[in-house]
Every structure is written in C-alpha cells, then in structure tokens.
Image 1: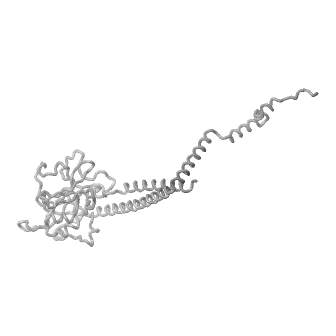
Image 2: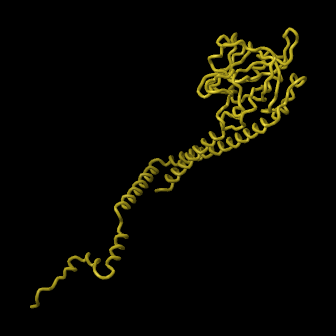
Length: 328
C-alpha cells in the first residue's frame, strides 16, 4: 500500500499563487484593475434602470416624444425670432445714437410753423436734436403714466404754441414732452410754483414716444380726451393732436418733441434716464438724458436672455424626444 498522498498548502489555497514568483505584484495589480469596482457597478445599474424607465414610458406613452419634439422645435424657433428682434433692437439703438450726435437744428421762422418733416422724410428727422421756441399750454397738459425706477409718475406733455393770432383763438404748434414728473405733482394745485406760460426755448429731439404707445394692449385702459378732466393712459398722437386744438393737426399727429439734455452721455447702458439727483432737488419736470432717449420697450440684452432661455428649453425637449423615440 502506498502511503498517504501529500496535499500541498498551495493546492488548498490557489489564490495565494498570485503572490508567488517574481511577478506576483504585477499579477495582483492587473487583477485589481480588471475587477469591477462597487462604484462602477452601481453606475452601470443606475444607467440600466434609467434606460428601462425611459423605454417603459415610451411604450406606454408613444405620443410624448412627438409632443416634446414639437415643443422643442417651437422653442428653438422662438429663440431664432428673439435673436432677430435683438438684432433689430441693436440697429435701432445705433440709429438713434447717430441721430443724437448730429448738430442741433434750430426751428425758427417758417420752420417753426411748417415743420421740415413729413410722412416721407420723417425717419430722417427722428431723434435729431432740434431747438424750438414756443409758449406751453399747461391747461391742456396730458399726463401719461410712467413708473420710473419703481416710483409712480407721469410724462408731462403739453401743446407748444409757435404761432397764434392776437386773441389766441387760432393757434399752431406741436406737442412737447417736457419730461418726467413725480405723481405727487400731478395736480396743478399740489405744485409749489405757478407754471410758466410765457414763450421759452427748449432743446429737444423728434420722437414717436413708441415706448408709451400701448393702444393695442388688451389690459391697458384707454384715453378719455373728451372727459371734463381729460385722462390719458398711453401715447396716441392722433387723439393728442386733436385735443391740442391746434389748426395744423395733421402735422401735430406725425410726431412730438421730447426735451433732452444734450450734454449727457450717449450710452444706452447708462442707468440715468432722466436728469435729476437722488434727492430730486432739480426743477421738475425732469428732462431726459441721451441715455434715456436710447431706451426701447425691449432692450437687446433682455431679448438675448429670452433667446438663451428658449434655446435651452428647446435643446432639452428635443433631447428627451430623441431618448423616448430611440431608447427601447
């Protein structure tokens, strides 16, 4: 009989062979690299679960991908439109800057009655500085609501007489926006002074006052020029020209003049849009700055921010639509 078979310690624990020999350290390192870690296993499991959820939802709601694709496409299209609007806004601001830099044109003599602008060349005169002398009619003032820096107030627009007969029964002129007035001075009895109704000279620019023209707004109250105390809520030149009582009503309804301080900076990003200090110690109405003349209802940076929002939503919606469509 042969003796008992010898059993080696290595045969009982073959795993320890990794540590034997000259290259044992390298073998251990390779085995550790190839072995899946707990973190990678969890990540793979989460990805598989996510794909399973997407696939299951896609089977139960096959139209969701179409809805998301439609929303994504619409958002991307709106982003393109906002980009076009931003480009137009930049062009409009550049145009206004160039016009405001032009030398001042003094309206005197016949030009102060028969104005040099008309329907055909109005664009050439918009935002061009002009100087005019006339007599403001404060009893026919039109106060258009404007909230400036969170404070209630009004744009103070008056008819400016440039020609009249001896008894004042026949008058010609133009509308003049003298500037912004705080709401507490809306009523003439609340003012600390008697308004000057004598002829005065004003530096202005020609404008359509489009940022306050909200006639088409559904939620904006209309004007009441025929009321005993005429009430104005937005700029609408045909109604305002008629309320002025001027003989040259056809010229008046083309555009108005806005008083401006031409010594201010010509930069649309300047935050000072009206010429007054924080203490409001200056004489009201506060005239516009050139930066104020450059302000649009929707500024380019606001439109670009909206464009980025639409693009981001469009990309996410489109990506989800693709995932629901192709991940099975």
